[in-house]
Amino acid sequence: MNRLAAILVLALGLLSCNTQNKSTEASADEIWPITIDMTSAEHIDTPIKLSQIATNIEYISLSEEPLIGDITHSPIRIFDDTLYLDGDNIFKYAPDGKFIKKLFLEGPGPTEAKKLRVEQAAFNSKDRYVTFKNDIGDTYKTYSFDGDYLGEKIASDTMNIKLKTYFLNCQIYEQRRYGPFKRNEKINIIGPYIFYAKDLNTDSIMYRYANPLPESDAIYRGVRMDLDVEMRYIHQDSLLWFKYFAIDTLFATSDLKTIKPMYIFKTDDSFMDVNYYSHLRVGDVTKNELEAKKVIVGVLPFFNKSLLYTVNDELGFADSSGKTAGYTKELVQNDLDKYLKHIDLATIIYQGTFSIYKGNMYFLVNASSFFEDGSSSPFPNLTEDSNPVVVKLKLK
Image 1: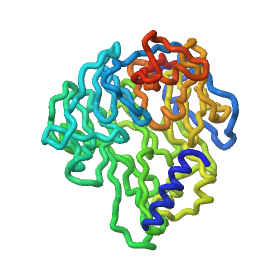
Image 2 (image 1 turned 90 degrees about the vertical axis):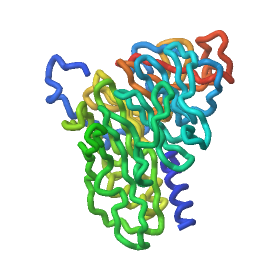
Image 3 (image 1 turned 90 degrees about the horizontal axis):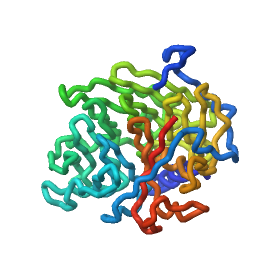
Image 4 (image 1 turned 135 degrees about the vertical axis):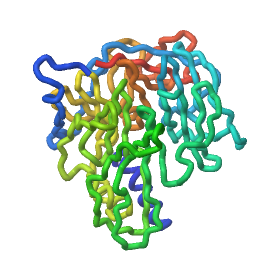
């Protein structure tokens, strides 16, 4: 069983028991959208090579103190050449990896907070602050990039709101439906919109991403399930890319006014769609049906119009024409240098723990990875127990 299906089956069982380059030949409008035909794509054993997506690789060693711990859900965020590691605190680093400070004090006090490492923070690059869910009091707290406490002013009015990111000084949030629902009633638990963009200057909604299936015949079976991996938001310089994992289109926008479909995945009934997902969310599917479904979760577009994507927990590559050989469980082979032999880009893209900044991709790898499978350390003082290393790729 694939990783995503296993998570969904486990959650379902537990809940039921408990009740920008320009083409020389065509304009951008003529090129987009690019169609990727997934109906003929299948599992392959050939690994993707790093040189297919990048021209250079560099490493940044982080200070040994404080120790970071598990980085499975922790992205590295890049703003004005300063690094912010998003974990159980927000750790601020200089460009060379030297530790500067934690952005907040941990505790129950009015200016303190407790952050869960699995809940990614939302960074506002325009006004230079970060907002995250406070596990004490279940509100959102905001701190400046310098660590100044700015209060509990974001999405603190309702438990149904999940703040996901910022773009152009807009708050991007999702509003979940939590009921109460009656058993055997017909509902669309996803709701009429998948996310909202709220202009913080005018305090008004400037964009709504509509659910393409506003009506559903899903029957509530006493189960309500949420996944935090439903939406992917990718900041790529001046663009915001977004994709809902049960919708076949990857969109991009520069202003939240003109929304362009950039990549369309041509799928068949073996892939999960919004209708199926609306049934899954309320327990209106069988275990066998779920195990047979595939889903496109992670995506990473490149400047040369090629694309990485994940099907369940496997990684695929599509070229600028949309052609793909399929998807693989094999780790990406690093053929650019001698240090890190293999990279688990499928998990990094699936988890959304990467950042794109000025043509480069940044992500974290455990220090122990440089002592496995024939890899070698790029730093003389690195040990298996050292803090994670930042990998910087120059993307094609």
